[in-house]
View 1 (cartoon, rainbow, N blue to C red):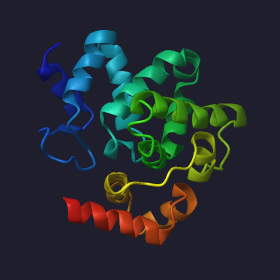
View 2: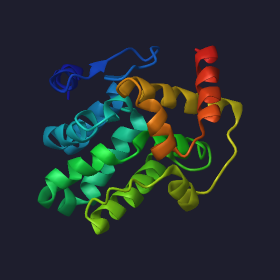
View 3: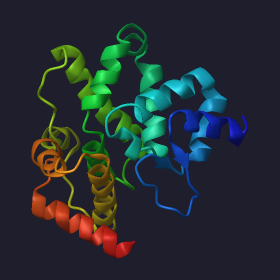
View 4: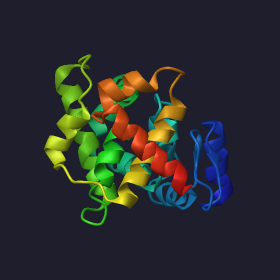
Length: 204
C-alpha cells in the first residue's frame, strides 16, 4: 500500500502527516509507517475505522501515534459487537474516554510493558465500564486507571513525555477548559501538570 494512499485518507480526516523529526501538534501525526502497516495488514476499510475512531472523536486527533493507532486497531478487531452493532455508542465512548490521561499513565510502564498492549488493555478497561453502565455521565478517573495498572514514580524522561502529552491535550481543548479537564479527568494536580509541561517545553 503506497504512502500516498495513507496521506489521502489522512487528508480526508484533516490529519496532517509530518516528518519524523517534527513533534506533532493536534491534528498531526508522524506515525505514517504504522498507518501503512495497519492498512496493508487489515485493509482500507479497517484503517478508515481506526482513523474515524481517533480522528473524529473529541480531543483524540492530538494523540495519534504508533501506540494509539495499534491499540485502536487491536480493539476494533477484538470488539466487533461494539463496533458493528453499537457504532454510535462506540464513537460516543471515544468522545468521553480520557485517552490523554491513559497514555500518560501507560507511559510510566515504558520499558517494562509493551506500550501497544498496555494501552489497549487500559482503554478496554474503560470501554467495558461504559458498555456495562450505558454511558454513565461519570468518566473513569486517572486514579481508577492507576489502581488497575499500578502507580509508578516518573523518571525525568517520563515526566517530559507526560508534559508533552498534557500540552497536546491543552492545545486540543477550547480556551479555559484545560483546568476543568485536569480537575475532573486527569487525576494530576495542577502544580504537577504545570511542572511536567514546563519540563517538556524546556526539553523541546
